[in-house]
Image 1 (cartoon, rainbow, N blue to C red):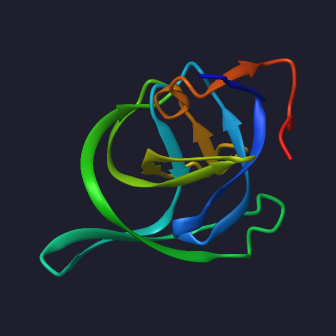
Image 2: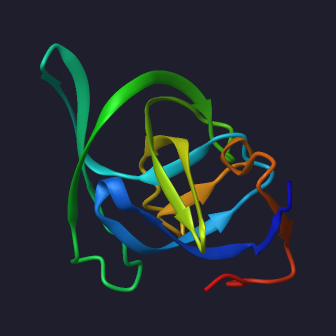
Length: 140
């Protein structure tokens, strides 16, 4: 399988959530991917638990809000880079990076103090990409 080289920052989309042009921090040190979410609310629909949340896809225009909903596939205890462990909802959604497209698991978290709204972890990258940490925005 041929792998695509990506940089430490890329622009991605989460089409099932209605998100495009999302700047993503690529982090091979992080096991799981995380997405900044506000107003997280668990709701039951057709006998299954879903999560509703607000997302700010543009870090330069935080007034722009996209209301999202996804099926909860798990709830996990995740240790963040600052050593704090928290319980997070996990969703599975389509991830689009350049011409690549595949489903990934994402934890929902408060990333208010972080520069980027999404962190792409190594589990989501799998064997699809190589990361060049000295470059950014390598994909169209």
